[in-house]
Length: 166
Length: 288
Figure 1: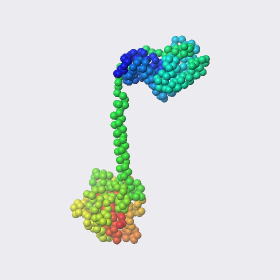
Figure 2: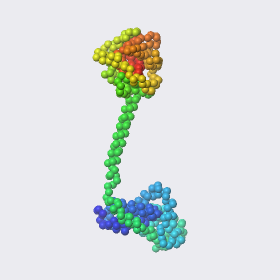
Figure 3: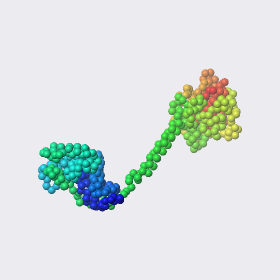
Figure 4: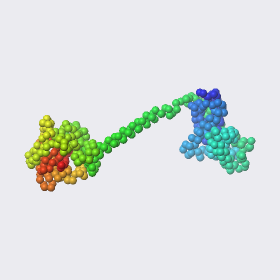
């Protein structure tokens, strides 16, 4: 890892950070194929960049930032913009038993715009703070809060109830 | 934890990488070499070289364009491009087979020469002094009033005049007998260039065909016609104001590249130019 102070092999990085990066990419792309492409590209960049990290958490955040940037690049591509609507219904994760409500939640989350779903994932699943999310996504904290608020409102509109209040 | 947040966690918990994809990721170090040379570092010298080549090519094109535009500029003011083109690639008399017309065809090279009346109206019959037996200057370099001007010849109605007494060295006149000047070769049957069949330029006020020889471009009160009688090169000059006719015998002085000389005709000092035109010559006259 060059002058990286944290010694971690590539296999260990894949094992530890691969699922997180994959979910983060999935929250952006809403389909498996694109998420896999993004994660693969992120690890290729990781191999080439050899980031200088002091701790595992630093490496994880670096990888997540690269993942978010790669997802943004993907979303900017014309082919993705054209093909994305058709992919939405196929983007539901494969689960064992979906209840109606669960399927409805899945659909609502899958229907979120990428910039909202990514924030939701980082906030509610990874349990990062608004400040950490702002650092990872290279956004202002105000933007992160705004996106969180809009995501909550959208989910509430679709699912009803007191979804993700405050 | 709220129920909704648990549902979100459940949603993302089910998003897992497949084993195949994980295997692909683990195989990346073999597929993607570490620390490759950044692409720009690879392409930088190529890009710089290509940019330099483009710049130099553009510069050369610009210079070539300037040169071409300079050459093709009309040799005298008020003359259209067609007239310039007509006088530039004048076909030569085929005394030297294999010689390309473009090599010896008169090409006006100095657009600034349009300021002077000599170069402005005088076509340049030749660019080579070696093949010109008469005349003190090269094509377009008409002898000025203060220059080594040849002595004007007296007008002789029917006899051949002695047009040039000062300029021609004896070797030159002797080296080009009339037989060498106009040998009728098979190339003479070739039609002239289509561009030569165009009507004369705007500067030619009168174009006549005397005896069907060729059209005559005159710039003065005189109009001239070149014609051959046997081995003799004759120019018939007609003063339009009076109708007087004078014939000049230029035998031995007309080369394959034409002729230029000064003659005194009926009290006028005429600068006469013969420019090859197909199998014959065009006559250009300037009245001094």
